[in-house]
Image (cartoon, rainbow, N blue to C red):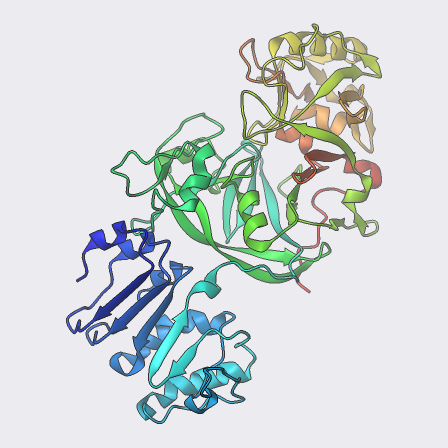
Length: 534
């Protein structure tokens, strides 16, 4: 058995292991060798299988004598993932000329020196005939099988313009989850990384690695002896934090042309954090963790941009019910929604600049000039909207939260604009509630005073009844804005309810936010993306 401490030498580029007949397994600490370029095994007859985790050595190639591996079935299993990916062409000895150049073989024949392995080579040949060998990645020469593992990196494909994922509303919490790799994660606009509970055998990330350096904003630490990088994943609902290993995971998502699904994409080596199961407290019951979409070196969008060479923008469209999923796009448009006609949602957007929140650097913030009710300005204290954290967007807040000095004049203005509507008793966490049977109804929700968030660019993000009043009982609807108290981190934290059925584009390259206002005006909703596959 090789010693586990071998994985501490993170600067190693080449390892050759020879005359090791008693070696039966490889230490998992090899995953820490992020600089490793080649692992060569010779005379290791006892090593009958290759561990599945070896594929995570994303920049290395592994070579071993094919005739020394006794367990052919295990070998077939070990390389099975390779034949399912974009692998390579088998080369024959006669296809290598004296100058060392190669030419492609039109067929893959068994090599005479190892005829007993004709069955495996026949499988390779069949895979080649089916078009599964696209790039030169596997070399079988004189009985030596060479499997470069760098193909497992998420290499950019010109055909991928964007990834798409469904968003589901949890009606109990009012929060939304994002579906990735057949798991649901809390959609967290301010989160810095992807986190979830890990298996005991999870790989770790060395402190000296680039992945650890990129996680600096996620409160990463190397205070455990300098070996494994750790982070501090946060539950954005409760504010609770924990300590967990940074790890690498493969995620599966769908590519899109903006109209429908085009292909399934596996993104390898996504940096995420482990977390204890207790950190899931207060999240939607279906949530397996938290998908941080905020600003930061290891947030989910940042990693997808880098690994797939996507345009540096993402969009979210939150559904208002659990009946149909909303949609998230990562990358460039178009972003088409259905009925009554297929249209690109980005064509109806207004824009305002994104800003940095001094109290929450990972959050997306905007600047507001003011707030209007029924086109009349709400009289706020001077500088109220710019003090503290300004105005942030946070999907981990079910409803918009206003700091006390903003909340009081805001509620007073809405009460004045709706003075003729019969009141109902307050329902926590809301203060101002109405008899909904006395409210008129329009295409954009209850007929109440529209609320304008006047952005620094002069464009109004208008909130109509569908996003300002929440139905809390059969006969009661309440103003869905919450008093955050005097110590609220931001003057305004725009919550998930106010974002529902609004198309929001976070253009990080141009540092701007695109917002549609309610999609009800154009007779569609966030639940109208076509998730069928071409």
